[in-house]
Length: 385
Image (cartoon, rainbow, N blue to C red; front, side):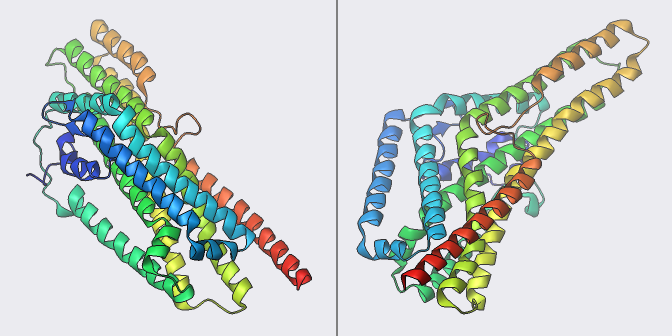
């Protein structure tokens, strides 16, 4: 068991991958044999998990106390709660379904491609000496902080609504939130691995010399660049719809945190205590962190990939006197334009830094709508009284 493998070697992800197998966020894949193992057992396990989730939904909908709590919510809370609950459940069920029924071959293609690139870049077996850069050290710290925040959330809500921890878990979708957190961790790890490989390919291109067989070396570099571009397309196929749901949930959760303060002040006519303010701040921090660790690595990966063409033009200046090699550079540069990676959420939108501003704008818009719904609800209650 080697937890010190560098992110440059895709086999670093094996132990995280096996942990995620427990939740069926990833299909059961054997890295050594490059094949899916026990597909029938995996499908049975997936059906079992989905059945448990459906039972949990039915229990939540039929529980008397939970229904009373839902009916006591103001209109904006009902809409937001229903949206968050639906998105998180859909995300977890979709992730499990794709892992056990649909995405096995896509995962096989993705891992095989990255292993091939690692072999060509001579990155197999590389280790990470810096603890802070170790993926499993970061994973452990993130898990500890996440669970501390969840425990604190449960404590705070138990002060406001007198229900058991189990019922709070039903209402707050704690399991599904953890599913989403783990899915984002996997997304982040894969995107970071793409970025390091693009950096290595760019370095290989930048250090090319006329001493070697330039045409063969350029052919190999272009092949590695092409495979990475195709691997990003496979990544989009695997995680496209999950990205749509995650981004919608991030927006709704931010609106919810802002709306909670307004609603509690509206319904209790008193200021929020420091616990509720801190709990909302914690959720906003976690949600924002989740958004940033998806968007920023993806954006920097695309920028690193685009740097390839700039380097190709720059390096070819050193071979201006050799028309044959210069022609090879020109052809490689033209072909590389077809393989510039594009991260997208199933074609609905591109994932880049501009997405952050879109989320902020939508959160502001829907928060204003929520305030208007709250005021309308308050006026209706006053007239009724």
